[in-house]
Image (cartoon, rainbow, N blue to C red; front, side, top):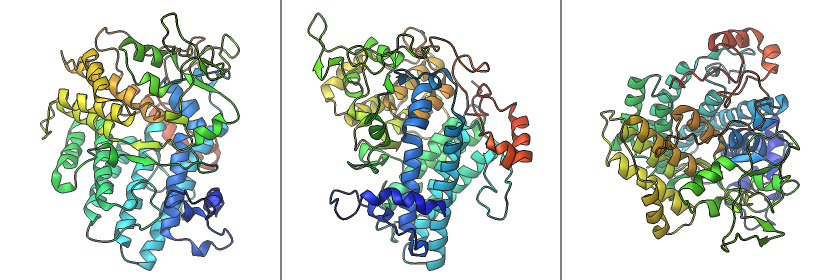
Length: 507
């Protein structure tokens, strides 16, 4: 089975490494004895593969971080101009299905068969993680993907369910699994890197994920979204993430192959710099997070100061032609990402407290008739504070910055501009989600009405995309392996193009 090859990735995390994060040792499995695998070991592997898929230099760096314009390319610029590598796209699709979802299914089978204490909670947690994975798949590819039949071994050519069908299924599953989680029973005692088997935190994560899914679809189906939001905000259902300590993160350790994948990528070459649109917007309102997110200009580690003796931060022009004025990673002319994101142990964020506060701000701003404790302005401020705390910045720095970017709500549009722009900054590093929220909220500077994002400087290399891709194209191999269902899906969404909007992107 392919999953046991993936388990070898944890070979470095053996007893010789006493600093291992709890759970990584679960990946040290003899591939010649697959029958010895436990649900905990498979959960570790699924979480590892998921975090690697959304946080690596390909899907995060060359797709999400480009499309959200957090990063620019230092030389090889095709992806920033929307020309993708089909092999990479196919690998992303396969890793979600084969190396995450199927491992979760196997973990559930083991628990259902052995019925060891706490198996009900372990099965529910795996099901919630499956919802998270399908949510990413569906949104990245614009909606329709193999879903209901995708993991049925008896069906070689699964149908593509529509985006609305999938969202309905995800919300229904979350409701069932939140109810199934029982804090009085055992859970994972090892293997769960994210929450260490804490059932109460998994409930809060599931409710918070339900908020994200609901808001993603709110412009397309407000009534269903409001129903889901109401359930998540009902304290009887277990609550939502309410502190940075409850954020869902995959924590890497120092040393390959279990260090942050972006850290590993930067060891051999410097393909990414911080993007000019991002740097310029942070500079515009004197955002101290810039000094946390990016490195200043320097000459072999020696800072290059401006005429006033201050550190300089310079973003790279987005979407240049390869070789046309690119920095090639020269720290004398452009700022590179800091260890905040590319450090060996920097976590891959899955869903954090800052995002939850910005979601609450949006819910309050929309006046949806649901019970939200606090105003939109209060949650907006809490979202920024959570981001500052996560970046290690002082309360004084937060107070001073908040005065520069007050919550504005002349109308819903300006409110969403304020919330969206700050949410985008706070989600730095979460390239895929930053891109999807850029598409959904379509925000601009709330104070000037100016555009925040830039068109690729040398134009798009995809004739069907002018501004930014609205989705990723289905892997071409699907046309041969699942041809009939692939054709139906392509016809239903309006073509296998990055220029076709996702079903929920109706703004």
